[in-house]
Image 1 (cartoon, rainbow, N blue to C red):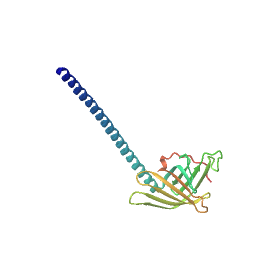
Image 2: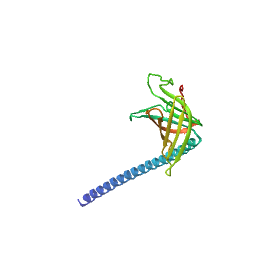
Image 3: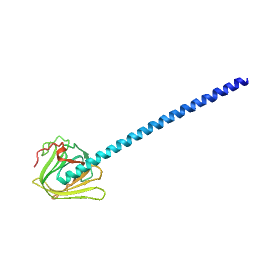
Image 4: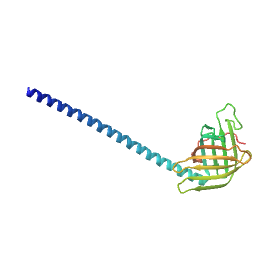
Length: 196
């Protein structure tokens, strides 16, 4: 009987030891998988930061060269309402001393530019650009043309090329804000409608 009790005790101890070892192995595997996921996420974040910084530097240089396009993916109207739009048909473009502002909405009405909105060209002047200590960029210029007379204000945060452009017409209170990305003119993929 003593041998039987000793044998049962030995079986129970070895079974509990095996279960503990399996639980320890499972916990170690979970910890290893978590460490791998965290390392992959950190690597992706680092890669995104490098890409964002490169896009930011390109955008700053494009602003300095007066060769840029803000491709907007959101329009905010003066009453605070907003709409998501197509970036290749909603933009603010500067090419040297010429500027273009275009909006195009998904409506059945073709609008003056033929693609559902308005396209206005003009001469740009009085461009002022300021970069603060944190790297935030503020830029402003005037656009004067047949279909537009407005002040344009660009705010771009440090670290990426995401920007907001406020368009303030001189002869009306129809302010408009476009949110999107600033890219160099030669890298843009825009479609320009009929201008006036």
